[in-house]
Amino acid sequence: MKIAFAGKGGSGKTTLSALFTRFLADAGHTVAAIDADINQNLGQALGVPADRLAALPPLGGHLTEIKELLRGANPRIGGPETMVKTTPPGRGSRLLDLSPDNPVHRRFGVRAAGAVLMATGPFTEEDLGVACYHSKVGAAEMYLNHLVDGAGEYVVVDMTAGADSFASGLFTRFDLTFLVAEPTLRGVGVHRQYAEYARDHGVRIMVIGNKVEDAADEAFLREHVGDALAACFGRSGFVRSMEKGAHPGLGELEPENLKTLAWMRDAVDSVPKDWAAFTRQGVEFHLRNAEAWAGAATGADLGAQVDPEFVMGPEALAASRALLGAPA
Image 1: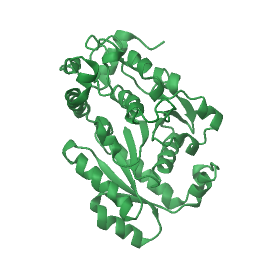
Image 2: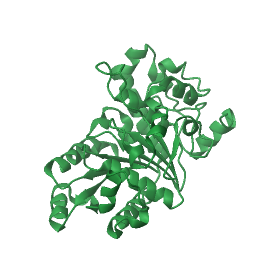
Image 3: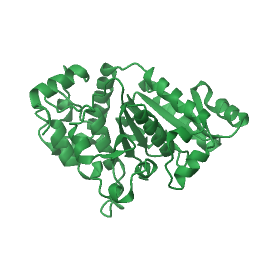
Image 4: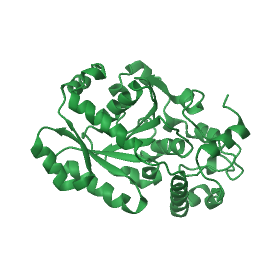
């Protein structure tokens, strides 16, 4: 399952992304984690040393390389210069799974708390004043577009703050979005934005209350988000230790907070996988982008990149591997 963590800045989404990643990995699941926040803190929250994080190649800094890899032998994509973040896979594309031979993981990943961590990367000196962060997050969108995740496999993405992910089709790439909200008016404001934008696209959103101290806090959240409130994470000495640079074992997490992580996993597992909808939504937003800006920017007919007979899923993955073989 592909899971996004979203929320306003400071809500605790990075902390919960890290805890959920650790919880899944400790249970023996295969997990990939992506830091797609403009503030790149997920690796630190997962306990990766600073020197290893500094050496991690950022996805957003190697877009051409990633495009060349993913387009494979797809005849509808002329070259990386005409492949944009929403370009959907088709027959001949190189699809990915979460096996050890995943070439994106091998090239851009580092082991972190039992998972594979990748990062979209921070702004560089060359980006300042001339680029938006979507150029970085586009690499994660391409990865998710081409990934076939199987049973017991999870991708956890720490999103950038606010509703910025709605600037592309990225918000449709997830089976479930956990929106982390503090019991404040600003905390619940992002939920209203998400719910409004996602309403017509079948995007599943569950609100996780964070820094909830008492029944009044929970009642406040329920008043403002209603049945979308799925669970609450209380104030935590364990989290305070994390914020100070310690990384205690999950067995030391407060029992009620550990139960919340388990409930979150069960909620994710209860979501049905719908590869047809995933494919359809990807095509829809690609055609929107092509008409709005990408066609003019590339000078190509990007609508022709859509393979009408292609549907993502395990069968497409098997066909891709049969055609292209396992990556070197």
